[in-house]
Amino acid sequence: MSPDPIGRPIDILLVEDNPGDVRLTQELLKESKVRNSLVAVSNGVEALALLRREGKYRDAARPDLILLDLNLPRKDGREVLAEVKQDDDLKRIPIVVLTSSKADADVVKTYNLHANCYVTKPVGLEQFAHVVKSIEDFWLSIVKYPPDHKS
Image (cartoon, rainbow, N blue to C red; front, side):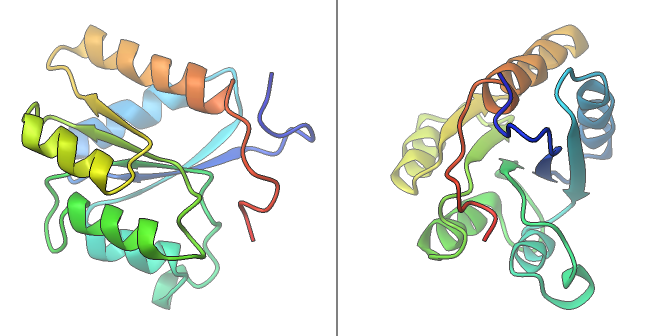
């Protein structure tokens, strides 16, 4: 079941500063059975600029889903999460926190900031592939998005 009956690709924003994780996520999602368009930015300032369609991101598509690392340069993921969830125009975009942090304090804080889920990045390649596939299966194949989520 596709979240969009007309078959429009799912727009995903990946906010990740590790080039290896970006490349791996891109490759894994390229193999997806659900059409998707992935845009990656490496810090929180760029993520917010894209979401608000500022500067060079003026014509950027509003993402359907955000994959957000917590430990980012310039503005960390916790700040990005807080700003997005406080913004009436952005708060309905689901945010999957995808991070290497296993700290209970980070889990609690991100859920208190209204993250939609918290996923710890595994170290191994095969386990990372499994995590991305699980995210794809749920967020790209099962979830129904609000009808006005792109407005």
